[in-house]
Image (cartoon, rainbow, N blue to C red):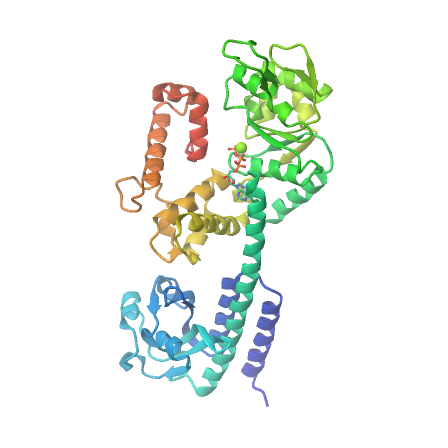
Length: 503
Ligand SMILES: Nc1ncnc2c1ncn2[C@@H]1O[C@H](COP(=O)(O)OP(=O)(O)OP(=O)(O)O)[C@@H](O)[C@H]1O
Ligand SMILES: [Mg+2]
């Protein structure tokens, strides 16, 4: 006759099996679920799943539950250290009824977190007889000791957990390989990888798939750093022009005369300094796509010339009467309120309507928090490859903090934040203190990283922030005071994600 608790155990096992078989995406969530079930059904007060890192020969806490769960996660154990270490080394299960007096007990952690383990059971998680981790339950809640029957059940849960790890690792490996391949293909041509998890962004990509088939202009709108350029790339890559050129022009980066020559080219002698003929970007983009970034900053006379290209597909190089005909798809982007620019007379309304045939609004990161773990993981992986550092991921606290932060600088700010944390952190997990989301960026003199690149970036950020504050965030005046071009200042503000706290 099965007891009620046995029925619950069987049902839980079936449910876990289904989850594992459905290739459930997030390993830590799945392991947490397994551990929660095991802890509840075997009546433990606290519990952990430790995974074995072969490279460093250490066990680290992948999931820890109970009153001190979060604190425990910062510790690692060497093989053989503590009861869990003993289990890993001997690949054997154990029940310990008097933990405090057991020689194997590792007092250090207990003292640090102020939690006394009296009774414990720990079992190896095995894959093909090899121990890949340990699952342990501490302090039987209703009763003096863990029984042999509890141990046998824990062994079944440990098998499930091992299976979940193997599954997740093989899925991750396959995904990494695909991503790497995609990365190689795309970055060879200067394209970026676009990470998308939230429903809202997946829907935008779906729209892009349909937009891609047409030749209509697209106006991409959204706050700074949301990824407008990456969406422009996707429109091109998902269109029939994908094998043709994708030409980027930043309309804010050049003064009017130079921008005109950049876009349309010039002939020799057209102006002082025009020592030879030059092909414009529109010419280079023939049969492909041109991406006009920061279109809101395009000077009015050039807007007129651009309108003609859109309407008649022709233009002349500066200093030439010969018309050139091109077949170019136009994508444009701005983080400015373009309708307000039109109302103020700073943007031609006829050009606005021409460009705005298909508007594409990219929402800010705070409105699509499901993307945050995915993006953060992606940036961390990239940074680990560059710095040759190894992290297991983000601590739960760090992830919670990233999820609740408002990200005024959007994905660009998240990218910078993760990169900085990766350089600074000395632990296995990126912790909340590495993110500097509550304290602001560390000053150069404060501990942390000693590498020159980070120090220079930190200094630049502080220096510019201070100058901007002194000039009431007026960029023209600040640029003058710093003796740099205004366009260069605005580029730095964007790159360093300097945010006006009053906005
Ligand atoms: N979905 C995404 N996946 C991966 N990286 C992203 C994503 N969105 C943005 N990024 C990264 O964030 C940074 C900012 O993106 P991008 O330059 O496209 O922003 P933007 O919207 O054009 O900003 P701005 O208006 O300031 O020009 C880039 O480094 C980009 O690679
Ligand atoms: Mg941009």
